[in-house]
Amino acid sequence: MTVEEIERLAAWCASAGIGEIELAEAGFSLRLLMQSVVAETPVAVAEAPVAEMVFKGVRAPGVGVFRLNHPTTGHPVAEPGQTVRKGETVGVLQVGPCLKAVVAPADGVFGTALVEDGAVVGYGTPLYELA
Image (cartoon, rainbow, N blue to C red; front, side):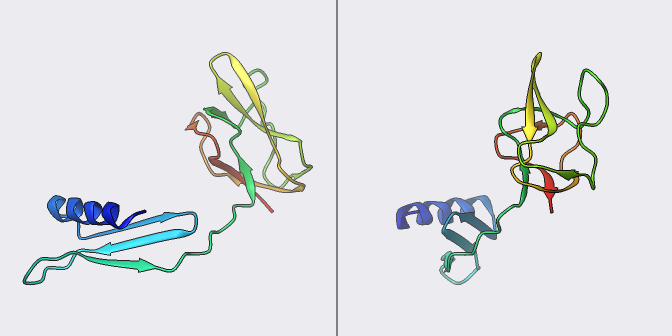
C-alpha cells in the first residue's frame, strides 16, 4: 500500500466517522486510529508485519454449495474424529447439478465442520480442521 493510498483511506475514514480501522495482507498490516485533536489530523500507525497463522485443515477447492452429506446418498462423507488419508474425499461441493469432491490435503484426524451444510463457499474457504 502506498503513502497516497493510506492518506486517501485516512481521509475517507475521517469523513465517514470511522474511528479505527485495521488491514492485514501477506507481509503487511496497517492500523489507523482517528483521534480528535485541534487540527483533527488522522494518525497512521504502521505495524511490523504479523506472522500469518497457517491453517492446517481442509479448504474448498472451488466455489459452490458445501455439502456435509453426499446429495445422492444422504450419508456423511466423513465423520468428525475419523482418521483420513491424503487425497481421501471428506466432503462435496455442489455447483448446479455437478458435484466436486473435497479431498484431505494430508493424513490426519478429521475435525468438525467450520461451515454449515448448504453454505455457499468460495475458493480456499476453510471447511474442516485436520489434526
